[in-house]
Image 1 (cartoon, rainbow, N blue to C red):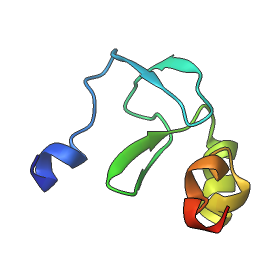
Image 2 (cartoon, one colour):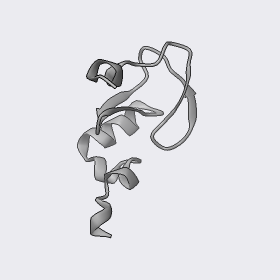
Image 3 (cartoon, one colour):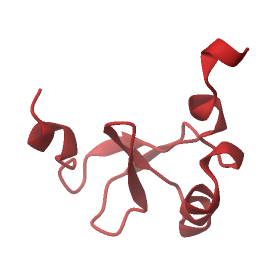
Length: 70
């Protein structure tokens, strides 16, 4: 898969999953971040703000843990 394909966003109206696992409809203003080579979508701007401050304390915490440290 090329870098451009990895960065391509879903089409407006497509069903997507938020970082916390909820299903939602993708819109142009859906909060999002490109993290570890994939788009991550957030259910609200405040969840995205938490992620921007520190991914390890956001709803993405399970995905930020280095499995070798467990």
